[in-house]
Length: 103
Image (cartoon, rainbow, N blue to C red; front, side, top):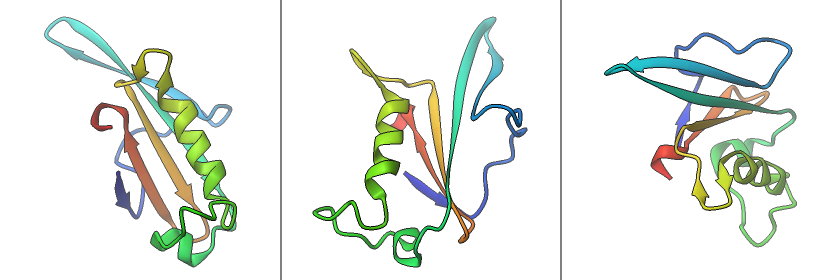
């Protein structure tokens, strides 16, 4: 998990969808990367700074963000290695990147 002030320099997804797929060509193999953006408005400063208690995830709605990451990365036999999840925490302009290949 990495914290970044903005999204990495990739083309933005279509405005009608939160899910986009980008294609890269490597050694005549085509790999698809899923980039999932999750917008979270009205996040408290403590949550944006990473200060929260795992015993009270409902405060600050960390439970919702963790369910989104879980749903985006989990498949029946493991973790989606080709998926990146970006949690965008507003109004603090903080983006948390979770890479399925690194989980």
